[in-house]
Length: 460
Image 1 (spheres, rainbow, N blue to C red):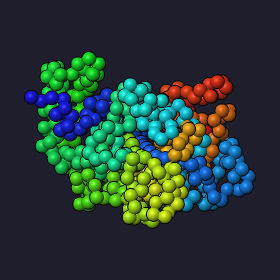
Image 2 (cartoon, one colour):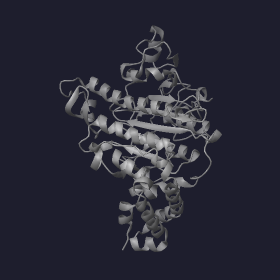
Image 3 (cartoon, helix red, strand yellow):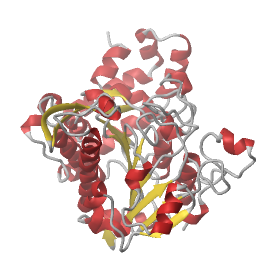
Image 4 (tube, rainbow, N blue to C red):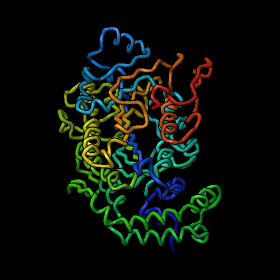
């Protein structure tokens, strides 16, 4: 007997096969203008980014005062020195925007945001029922369809395999993610590495698509209704699998190689080794055209950190670092900075790999945006007052970005913008005319301040 548990464990899509189904209604639609899609990479980090850590050390006295008072400020990066941890992006400064002042009080804060930072709603400690809407990454994936639609990667909690993710393809629906580089490679490139398994998955999908399959698996009540809706989308997944098999020859050209240390989930790989391998898989998936949208949880409070320069022999805990605990005699602030540097190294690699990949009259990076941000706000115990963003945007980005430090007015002041405004900006600029994405801020509403719509200064 084939049951749902067996299917979810052994299918090519793993535990998230059903979660992805609703997002595939535009699977084979045309890409963006000139046949080149836009691409979006969301990189989530834990334990905050303190706004002062983003401030330019070469600010003038006047600009420094405005920044510290959290008043509106815009400065060209050209001629300015970047903070130490961001200097890996110095040669790409023309594509860099440091965005300060966005609030995220409509999201979950403190230690974790779970799904809420991507959807602008309160997550109620990660309950499924609290997932209020499709998250921003899936909304963007609808606008620029691809075989996988959306790919989620995660180093959260030191997990391996295919596990529950943080993005949401629909309300009350949790995505899945790949939790180690080997799993990500094997699943994304399965039609190259194991085509027989893809054919087997199609047989399993055919079975589950039948009402008889639901009956045998014993699903009842609300879960049965949810699964019935998702079953209606299974045929699209089957078409995707067939398309991937047809693409296997071209996909093979982009197959990433991983070192032996990443076998069996990479349990003995250091954090920098894992990050470098996951970046390799991420870039390969973009180059192969498997996806145009990636969400990458690069760490959370439970992610074990090993092999950091200066703490090579320590197993660093991000949570105690947030409470200023030193490891190996290195001050907590310095280790937190080293963690950020390791993240920026991955951003730099993605930028340089995509800039080295020709596409149309330019490169793949021309049509790509990378957003690196703290999932829980401005510090270890974030309150959502600020959510700093490091943004790398290609020359063909639809937004007026690049080469700037931008501070928006503080929460509760006319002209302030929220995380919802930023996501609305992304959607409006790329073809979704939504009036406003996400929940509204209560303080802005009480003061009857305008908080609906995109950030107009960024609209190209």
